[in-house]
Amino acid sequence: MSELYNDEVLVYYNYEIKVSYKNIKNNNRDDSKEEEDDIKQDIYQKQFLKCLRLDDYNDEKVMSVVDEIYNFLKNNKNIKDYCEKLKTKVLMLSLMHNVKDKAPTEFMFLFAYDYFEAMHLCLKDIFTLGYVSDINNQRLLEELEK
Image 1 (cartoon, rainbow, N blue to C red):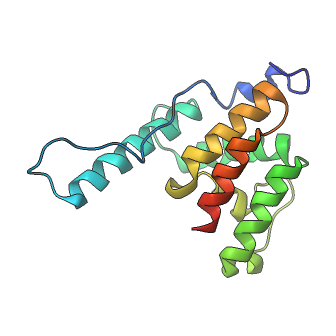
Image 2: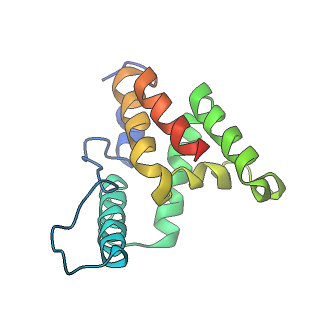
Image 3: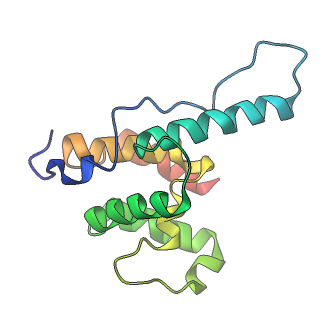
């Protein structure tokens, strides 16, 4: 693990979880696209909670963990870039008021279904390498462009 990061934030985030939900295929031909999407959504939710070290969804606990992660990483250039890209993409985010020491809405968006698989890899890089690898940075940037 990188010397840049101590175990403090790792209490809140488990980067060792394998996050992979977008490419799951349901082999049951009787299931519709909607059913397949429901399965992917369910797997996303379970993996998201595992990464946050939570057994059940609790909005207050989720927000607390995301706030801790943000406060730990808020000066990271890549994290700043991802947040700025989202603010540009989702115009309403630029209108949101941010509270000191709380994760801004655009950072929370990085944990949404569309971005979490790629964001998780970036967080894993930061916690293990001390930086985001080019391949994972590019992957998240491509997701943010969609």
